Image (tube, rainbow, N blue to C red; front, top):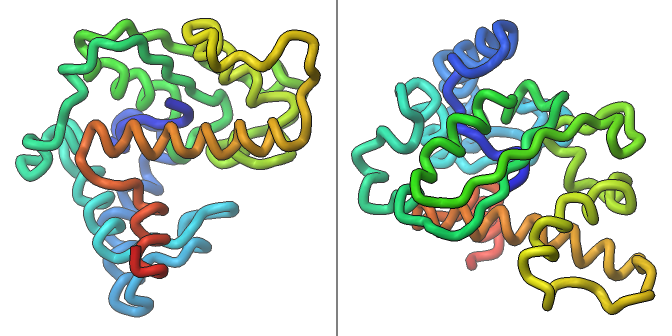
Amino acid sequence: MVASGTGEPRLYPWLQRTLLLIAFRRWLPALLPLFGHLPGWALGPGAQPLPAGAARQWACWGLRRGWAFADPEMVPHSRAATITAPLHLWSIDDDRAYAPRRAVDALAAHFKQAAVQRHHLRPAQVGLRQLGHFGVFRRQAGPLLWQRLLQPLEAAVPALQPPSGQGVRAADIESQRQNLGSCRSTVFSLLTGRCLPNDCWSKARTGG
């Protein structure tokens, strides 16, 4: 899981904590009636729009101690404590607005039976000045970053490793980007029985 954490403001740096509380209590409730959804620009550079239901649920979880895991409606869907497989969770050093280190640690704590491995990545470790929350999944970061993220998975599952002696092709990089996004959505669905907000928005637009 990459750049995924619990969205409780108390786990964020003080500035982001204040902005989150304003967003959950004032900003989202004001924008949703005007647009019928939450525009991407309202969430910051690189963000995608959210359907109204997903935005309201996000705000509700953010104002609840324990986040989604404390929502009575989510109890039947929460399977985090039953997962026993190895699990890798990555936090990004300059991701302060969406999934700071403490928020990722809090999410990791819910996987009580899993063999959790926590990783913390600084942009300089892959030769970049910044990554933030969305930079991990952008094509510009691919050649430097995605192989590093996938290495623990490939080490655990040899079948995922590329053939010996073959370099990384552009098609391989694009495939890795899609796999990372797919893995993120799949894990969320396994834990909650629901799709990620961006996936929900895509399905709502396409009728899927």
